[in-house]
Amino acid sequence: MPANLRFYSDRLLDDPIVLESIPNSYRSSCREYCALAQHCKQAAVANGDPVVLGDVARETLAAAGSISRALDLARGTGAPPRTPAEQALAEQLREAMNEYREAV
Amino acid sequence: MAGEIDLVARLPAFESGKALRVASHLHVSIQPHALVVCPLAMAGEDTTIHTVAIGHVGKPPEFRSVPDPRFREDEYGLFTWLAERIVAYFDECRSRGDFPQIWVSSSPAAALLDILADRLRYNRDDLVVKRFGELLSYATERFPVAGQQALMTATGALRQHFATGQQEAEDEHLGTVLVWIEPPAGRNVLAEVAATELIPMGAKTDPTFDRQALDPLVRDYNQARRKNADPKVLARRAKAVHDVLVNVVRPVYEGTQRAIRILGRLNLPTLPALAALDERERDEFQNFMQSRDAGFHLPLKDKPKPAAFKLADREDAMDNMESAVLHEDRLGRARARLAGDVLRGTVRNPRKVHLGPWRFEYSLEVVSQQRVLRVRRRDELSLLLDTRLKAVVTDIQRHGRTTTVSLRLSSGGRAVGLPRTGEVIELGPGAPDWLGIIRTRVQMAERLSNPPWTHSDGGIPNCKPQDGGAPRDLLRVLDGLR
Image 1 (tube, each protein chain N blue to C red):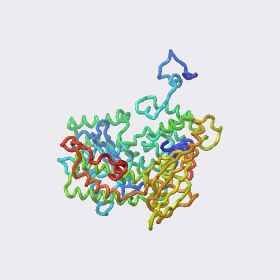
Image 2 (spheres, each protein chain N blue to C red):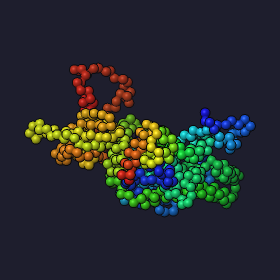
Image 3 (cartoon, rainbow over the protein chains, first blue to last red):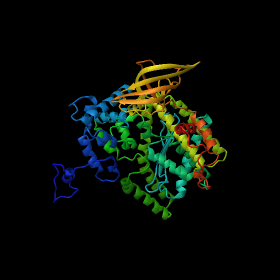
Image 4 (cartoon, chains in turn brown, orange):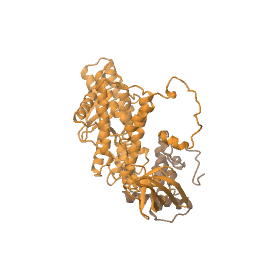
């Protein structure tokens, strides 16, 4: 359970404070059925969550955790890969990035 | 991982707030005479058109709407009006020996045309509307075929050329894709995308708009109609409905036109395969029209044999299109390399063995460092630089990241020559075979001259083992059947 999660016994779900405090796990399919999809998407965008680029991106970039970190790994900038999974992802992204630059 | 190229393009697109190009060539053949059609259906009435905007590429639209499409006479009046334009356009294309091209905003609009074509082409009461349905069927029947140029969706065409900073599913909204491609200066692209998402760009109006603006006006019109109101009152109320609908459909039409302009302004070289695709489209259109002239009706359901032919056509089109993109578009080639469909490596041990008079066996090894490779023994690969050279995979050895693929040349040894040691080569699927479908059709006509027991009334046939037992090399026998 997230450390910053709080329970409000005296507030309702339509209260923005309560809404903000609810952890979310946005998926691309959420917008098909959930009224909160837009709210959760905004949170995902604010966090740079790879899910905003789709479910394939979410799975592929899971080791990086965020779009900015994935970009760092792809460009070889920022902190070096911290885990073997990040290392493997960095190689994969750099290879694809090189192919893209050469081809375009 | 599928779509690595698209993913690494989406990442910086998200960061910079601007879509990136993911094609080195133009993949669509934009006809200068193409017709842009933007229909909107009434909520809950999926087989209707409430309003439509229609016009040629680069030209202003004509609008037509009905106050309530649930009244058959009004709706058929709209269909007749639309039929006049579609029939005239198709006739014009036919007289020029060309093919018609219809642009819609996105897949839902194409699906709406498909439903309409299906509904109207069997109409017995109104021959004009029936003709409209038949002609529309040409475009909608071509739509699922890869590389077709008859019914284009603006979102689909843009997606082939750009990667946005949003999910692929969200790229189906034409407005948001246009914002990513041409972001407004000085404004946050994500906020702009969120605002644009609220504007309808498909084949339906917004439910809130329906409730608050459209429904009261339609109700007013219906009340007046029930009370046999003065024609002037009716016309005024119909115009009120028309005016609000035009405000909804106009941005869809303008967005579609803008998408076509963006593609035209890319100034990319056209994919060489487009010439063959245009030619095929012309043939398909001429055949379709001749078939209508001869009085053949479009079947409600395909019988097994025509269905098998259609499936073969679609498979062939898909293979050819994939192959064309791989051979002719640099990004397509890069995608195939990353996916392992193209083998790229250094040549080792090229050998030419003399087998007899004028008979040689050519073999070589290709050493690759590719992370992913989709190659199996017996696969036939072509040299991408010159597809006359073909080689069959005889062995694959993987040690760590290094893969050694052994190959025996099946053709092109003399015409192209054996690659030299140290040369970096790329091998992959053969070039598109545009005439292959003719051979396939001939072969299928022979095979399907007697319908298989699965599609006839004879039931399961009696099975009896083949004389002489099972063949020694089952794979070879199966290959022989291909």
